[in-house]
Length: 459
Image (tube, rainbow, N blue to C red; front, side):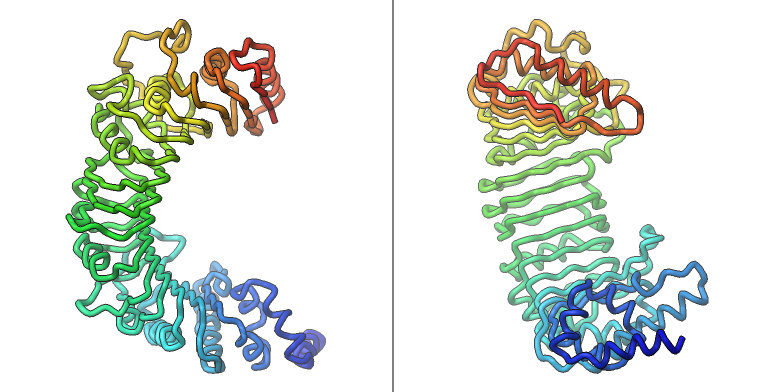
């Protein structure tokens, strides 16, 4: 023990110019957990840094409740001591991740006051408990009022598992990025925020609840980025006017849309939460039409299976502006109708990416026409326009070289007049099929090609 203490104390003999790079090299949170037993000189050495990250997980790691309590006390004491010795004026980033916030209210409020008084730009408050995310008790702990009243310097605010109730008076003069997760949030709260804080450009909602719908109103919002990830929306209705929106990501149930986003560039839509085959092809078409200006589109297996069930089973009414189409797909025969639908609807597409994975394949799937799905591409007389004029690159990730996958690639090779590359990245799994997959993929190189410049790579 004496030797260990002497080694620890020997660091304190170093001059500050040498000590600062040492403590700055590892992540702050990890270094804090490892060196919190050292003397005040270590605390002082951290002060020139302006990114502060207090994470309970790096202090509390025992399975014993008694030891956890002791470790948690060390963590809280470390925060208190560090703040007490901090002498610099401004900080850039402050992050506090701590569970059971009700038991340390004073510490949390001291942290928030400390950060806001030093004009913090990036503030994160995370009160979630990683082993029990389904417990919403922490979400009842209110965000300290200093965040609303003294947050004039905030540019980024990330809140998780806390009570979020926006007061009538806000001081978010510089806020650009707002992220809420595991929070009970009302649509009126979002409407108030976006109408009074026109500086907000990015809004991210993850696993939030309490939303009766997602109608942001008739007034345009200034968002350039919007993420709605697995939130509980009672009416499954999404409506907004966002003339500057460039990126939209959604994961959840199928929704009815009324969206105005003329400058949209990238859209990522995932309906993996759907567990039944519902004939909602019209709703899916409406969503795609609302985002028709997008150049990058990512969709899921559910959309591929269901979109032909609408009034227009072959293509959408009107063209999509998609240049890069990304499909999260199993390349199951049930998905081929949706793939053809999108090929027909994207006449300007230049790149197609197939991310092969596993999804929910509906046994009650019915193609709108009497088609042998195992021979889907055989004898196709109408070739999608993109294969004739624009599609240059096909990327296949985690390829399993199934029959459906290979026959689809054969179809592209046979009809793609301007196709330049087909890049196949083989799935590496512990199933003993790696060499077979490589061999099946390489066999494509011997097939007839429509394009003289087509190159096929397998890796």
